Length: 43
Length: 575
Image (cartoon, rainbow over all chains, first blue to last red; front, side):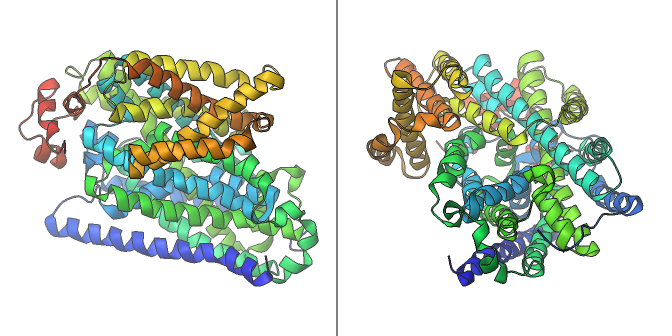
């Protein structure tokens, strides 16, 4: 693989990790907010 | 070799980091602590966890320190395709279980373990086989995480390996013991956020600090042609293929996955599993790139031990602050899996051993169940710490257990779809598969000549079974049969006369093939017509403490403890 391809291949994973982190974080706080509004425990 | 000098923490720094991590985790778990915990919530948190926590927990549980180390080892050993052949297949383990998970949850909406469902479906022997293999697998996993913690602390601080193991064990036990699974999944969210944040920073930092991308050119001579190839057959046959064989086995055999399957809200199973698949894959493949970078750099891990690649690379290129972040990342990864293993073992001992086999479903006392769960955590921790001091080969143990679980895959999955499978067929097929698997795996006799060809023929069947089952989950039986036949026909010329040289892979495929053939042969002409509605009636809540269990109160309203309450658990059965 070329140097550019290897660079992209190496650095794409932390970007995907950040995207998943955002999805999970957003969902958690949505759950947390809903739990607070309904007076229930989040877990 | 790198030119930077390795960093090591002082004793006080490490103590502060560990106190901050485990103290913070304990405080979080303390906020959800109840003086009188509910036994069912201790095992599955009321079967109604939301997407955020469940996706985080599934991801955190599946990512463990060993998977990071092993992915880096794969990158270092097999080159640029190595992390893919570790992380991708590991990620697909999560993905491929979700259609089966939806079926399992549909027939047993309030179960606590797949072994418990097997008891409801078949009886004691099949349940105990599954429960026993789950306990062994979780104990190995727990031990390997403690080992990883001990190695890390010994490497980065003045403390010894044993002191590190004991610290990690005590820290995990501290926040998991009282609230069990509820504490495990909630702290998983924090741990996975810490891991993700750390890896998103550390990978690019080391990449540029180690003079990449230029090092891809200056270090290219350090790689063989196989290591430079994205389509390396060596990487596929030695790393990828045995993992593909284990994809379904791990997902079926691992109680930590099943526990989350029963805990998440039923309509969120699919997004949870897909998110965890992507999260796990990106994280583990990303960390595996450390191994590839080490290879390009000509990095020699101390003592030739590939488990040292990640910590030594981190210690060489990260400044102290980021090294502390790295330290927390690894501690978070191993702790999140260790607490899941403790929860898995405790739920098996609570539901499968005490609840189903000692007291009986109708007479099980929820308070005693909680005691059993907590004592199990204590004993499992003590056992894992003892075994950790032996410093066994983690990867070998995992591959062995994964292959062992291969014997269970077809009988377990068939039991959820096919009315004809009996307890006898289940038990005999698994035992027969194990009887064939062990001598081939450990090469008790040479796999040459006719024996080798016979093993290869079974391997072809095993490949057909695996690919057929993978397709069956998503597309149904017709597509599965077509794919299985095509897989057998296409693979046969490449497998026969060749594959028996790879004992680990051959043994795994043999286990799949033998268990499938025997289970099918013993069931196909039988007259058994199992009513799947019975499973929902035979599984369900042990604890009717409505005050402590709002979920239970809504789905099993007014139910009494014991068998009478389980009639109401058929609610939600979609048949």
